Image (cartoon, rainbow, N blue to C red):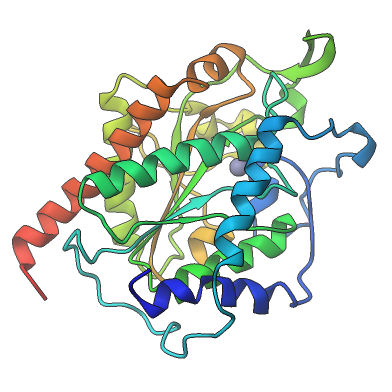
Length: 316
Ligand SMILES: [Zn+2]
């Protein structure tokens, strides 16, 4: 890698893994990413966890690679805010793979972990962004327990001097909506009630306006691809998971408690690409075509944002 910033990724992980951080391994997005663990759902019993599939083993191997290759030195300048430059050659995008191999997030209707879905899609997004000229795009794969990994993600993004933190997730539902079915002889859970993508920002992020601009462009591209957004987050039926809908045309929500959105010092956007607990939508998302559509949409959106900025400001 070209710069010192990239080489500090492992350093942040090595240092912060030692910090005493409260741990919660509840499965769903909202439980994984909030600032408080008090509302977390009960832990999934370890005995109920299925044995690691080949896909999961592959994901774990992939996860180990980035962290092991870097020297353990901290960059003292890394904590300083970075002046935004939208020159694609310099604009640093961290594509964050939601959850970890150890704490995999939601489980799909067909018992594939969210982490596997996140990793596959995030890799495709990284490829597309690089193909659009964003050479400084970095895939961030984090290890460890859920909550401590969130702190490490924020630190890694700072150490990488990222201009944009883009977190990739796949959605599920609160437990009360889960139904049972059998898939490949195994008792499994699903909910076909909700579907769709959603895009989240935090009004507490110091670069909120930039975050919102990029989120709206991402959501516009998703909608432009014929995808529908998840409207349920605007409805009271979601209880504590109800969120303010910032753009009712395209599906941008604010979710102020998410650590990776509020604690990051650069613009930050979280994309729920779709619901993997919905049986039809899971089938659609488990395809190269779908990953292509979503990743192209993300890349076009960020390029559009930067073209506007770059056109106005020129080289800094
Ligand atoms: Zn998630």
